[in-house]
Length: 292
Image (tube, rainbow, N blue to C red; front, side, top):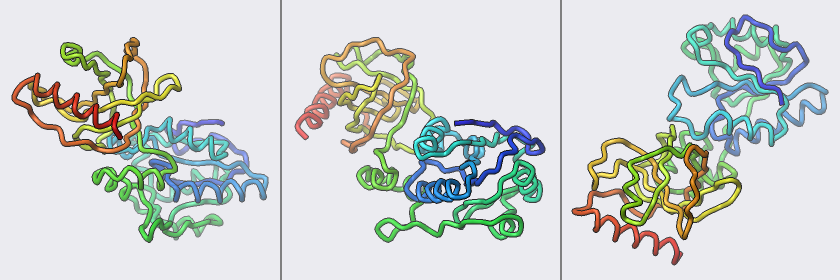
C-alpha cells in the first residue's frame, strides 16, 4: 500500500488513474466498509487503482476519534485499498475552497468519486456532493441502516456512552478497543497487590468507570480489568486509563503498546473511605469477572 501525506493541495502526488472514496472514515464501520467494497469492485472492473482520501484527524480533535489513523489505514489495507492520501489538517489545507479541492482531484487523476450522502468538503464545509457531480462520475452511498438505525460514527459514540459493546461489535465489525503505550505511573497498585499498567491514550469516548476487558499484548490475549477515571480515593485529578491483567502476569511492559478490548462495564468509579476499602472492591470486581 502506498501512503501519501498531503500537506499542500496544489501539488501533484500521483498521476495514475484512480477511483477514490472520500471521508474521515472514523472507526471504518459497516457503512464505510460497504462504500469501500463498492470502490474496490468498481476499480477492478475499470482497471483503476482503489484509493482513499482521509483526514489526518477530526480537525485536530484527536481524542474525539474512535480509532487512530494508523488503525484506519490498517483496515483500509485489509479491505483491499491500494493507495491512501492523508490530508494534513494544517492552515493551508483547511482554508482551501471547494473549487481548489476539486482541482486537486482533477490534477491527481481521480476519475470517479465515492462518498456518503452527507459528505462536505472545502473551507467551512461549503462543498457538497452536487459540486462533485459537476466534475466527476460519482457513487453516493445512501444512509446505511442497522436494526432500522442509521449507522454513523456519532451513533457508535452514543452506544459507547450506553456501554452497549455488543451492538458496537456488530456495527464496527469488531469489538470496541483503545490502544496506548504503557507509561510509568505512581505505582500505587503494587502496594495493594494489584499492579496496573498506565496507558497513554488519546480517546475521550470511553467514559469513567470500571470495565471488564481483554488486553492484547504481543498477539496474546489476557483477561483484565480496566479503570477509566481519576482515582479519587488517592487524590487523583488527572483522567487516565489503568489496566490490571488478572492472574500471575508479571512481565515488564513499559513503553509497549497494548490493545484493550472493552467487554462490559462493571460499575462507576467512586471515592472510597480508605485504600483498603478500594482494594476490597477491586478484588470483588475481579471475582465478578472470573465468575462470568
